[in-house]
Image (cartoon, rainbow, N blue to C red):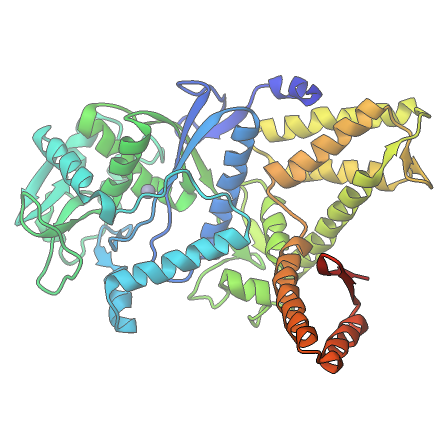
Length: 500
Ligand SMILES: [Zn+2]
């Protein structure tokens, strides 16, 4: 395959840990281990999270396109112990279970299903392993025991805390965030319940369960539940090893969650767990941070349906996916009706060009200028993706290709003035980037699936009517469908149908 020529350029990615762009060199090629922090399943999926998962989906797809054998692990946080930046431990799953008057695991089931449904609508490929925190309590206890044994944690009334100050005295605790540790220690506010901890930045590896706490497990320190950060360390170690290639998540996770994951791994086995840390930026709405308190936050389904006062109309899941990819993952993405409308129009243009491209054949009249213009795009589109997965530049190149396709580089009988080899490569590259790498698709496909199943039912009902010699009903169905542009054809093998 010719396009392999263009893979050879270096893939560069921005590593949060080193704060620079680096050449991607996996530790054990062709294998790549990638871990992305998954959702806490206590409410409807957040649009900002969806952007993160769409962007990592594109990274996953591209690494596979390059020929890597990727193991993509994305966890489900279902044990409910969310630690806020202030260090306070709350249990959002149990809190929501009380609100909805159900079991915590019903909350987990309900919102895990909702999460998977939305990601499927956004055409995200499922990860290879999707471990749950509650399924890995044993691993979290084992890791906690060893950190305790290594002297980086202490027990306080049935809870185990990570000793950040001791760790920071020996290691660079803020290597990922680049923050000043002394400032952090001074700025951390004292909050209720913190008196158990020795240091202000210490965080729970294991928390003693109060009598009212429903989700609880046996441990060497009595009944309790694990801290949030330890679950990702335990599960990434279990499935990707003590050191792996890529760890991703939203950039809000850098200062606490990911910082603590690194500290835990070093305290556990003196091993820096991750080679490349990748972080996605936040969403804004009309230039303001998206947040519930500002009333400018909408759910993915509200966006699909246009069911929110800030939205003029709904946008299809593929339009939303396209919109999410038209900015680089390290930039903020601003939602506005104008930007969404522009994305919708632009996405349709790319799809129309794809449909046209598939119908083109080589004319035999080769125009060197056109050849050169098309050949350039092959190089540029790989360069764009190799430049820190820059989907925004990839989309710009697809637009460039669409212009070449649309603007008469073919004659009236759909013949392109390109070498057959170049035309085939254009088809392959365009389709590969649009569908396989960016993960976009024609949405009629989804509609046809529904239409297919509905038509099967209608054809069956009509067959029954005909078997009963009820030709009035049978003709009524045929005529009504014809009015809607669907033609029935009764043949020897049964009835088939087609859209006019
Ligand atoms: Zn995590």
